[in-house]
Length: 431
Image (cartoon, one colour):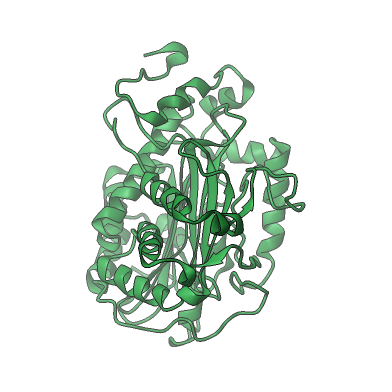
C-alpha cells in the first residue's frame, strides 16, 4: 500500500494522471465517510447542508420533482408520434422469471419495500452523487449474497453482454474510488439500490430502477420491447490501475469517437459546432454551469428540461462523419440487447435531418471537452469534469460523466404507455 493507505499503481495508463490529484484523507469529509454508513452519511448531509452548493442543488431537485412529467423538449412542447410499440424480441418470459426468483429470496419486509406503482413519482428520484438521497427498494451492500447474485443475474439477463460488462465495470470503478478515499461504507462495488415499478409481466408495462453513484439505469418493458432511459454512467477515475480489477476502463470509446468527429469537421463547421470555447466560459448564461452537473443539462431530476438545439445537423455531414455519429450512439445504446439497439439506431437515422451536434471546449488531443447529440428521439451528453473526490480544479479526462435521455416523453417508457392498457391499481406483492 502507498501513502495514506492508497493502493499502489501497478499498471501504466494515460489516465493514471489522476494519482497526482489524490486527496488528503485527514480532512473532515473523508473522516466522516470512513465512519458513517450510507444512511448516516445522507442524513448528515440533509440535516447540516454540507457542502452548501450540493444541498442547494438537492433542494432545487425536489422542487423540480413537483412538476408533472412532460419529458425533455426543445421548446416546451412535446413532439408526438416519434415512438411506437414494436416487437424487439426481448426475452421477457425469462426476465420475469428472474424477477420472481429474486423476490422468492426476499423477506416479507423487503418484498413490501421493493415494489411501487408504475406511475409513482419516486421513479424520478434516482440520482448519481454518492449521497443516498432517496432510499427505495433494497441496497445491494445490505443484502445476503444470494439476493445480490439474483439481482446481478437479473441485470445480466436484461442487458446486452457488453452492456452488462459496462455496468459491472462502472460498479467496480466505484468500489475502487471508495478504496482510494477510504470511504467503502458509502461507496463500494455494490452500493446500489434496485426497485420495481408496476407488476413484472409479459403482457403489461412495468420497469425497474437500478441506481447509485455514477451508475443509474431506468429500464421499462412492454411485452418484448425495452426502453433504457434515462441513464447515467460516470467514473472518477475512469480506469483501475491496481488490484484485482486492474485494466478496467470505461467511457474511452465514446470519448475517442467524439473527438475524432469534431476534428474531422472543417474549420467553418467547427466554429458552428463549438458553442463555447472554454469549459466554464464567461459567455455562458447564469445556470448553464453548476458545481454538480457542470456542463451537462439532462441529469437527475431534469425530466422536463427545455434544451434548444445547438450546433449543426448530422444530415449536413459526410457519410464518414455520419458513421462516426452512429458509432458514438452505439456506445450510448450499449446497454440494449442487440436487436433493440439496431432498431433504435434505424429510428435515430430517420431523424438525422433533425439531429444536432454541439461542442464545448477545445478539441486538441489532450483537451477536456463536452459534446451533445440531440434529436426528437435521443439526447446524449459527454462531459469531462473537475474533481469531486480527486483534487483537480479543472476538468480532466480521467473524470467523465455521460447520460442518455429519450426526449418528447420517451423517458421511463411514458410515450409507449399511451399505447398500453391502463394500470388502474397499485401493485402489492402477495407471494
